[in-house]
Length: 104
Image 1 (spheres, rainbow, N blue to C red):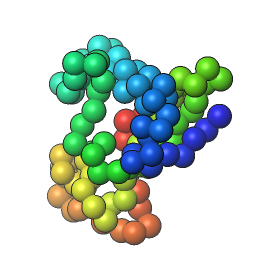
Image 2: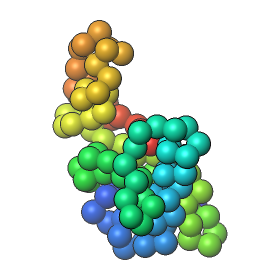
Image 3: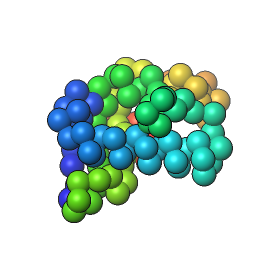
Image 4: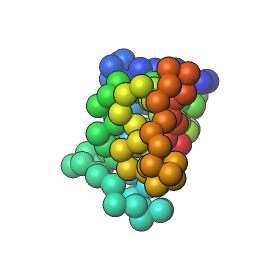
């Protein structure tokens, strides 16, 4: 099942929330070797998770995370504008019609 969940509602599905952050740690830190933050619970989170993103999460039949994406409107803070402006020739992407997708 696909779920569309805003960050402020994610805690209402603790099994899905926990397995998503654990899977992100596995993917980004262990497999890819990225310098990401993993907390004492083993969760990978970053500053953009605190901005109430929209998560699109594939929920497995047992309630665990099968895959996901995180979306943020470009009218606020985004990774591309904060860290990857070199990819856009230093032109910020800001539009109510464009959303950034990360952490897939």
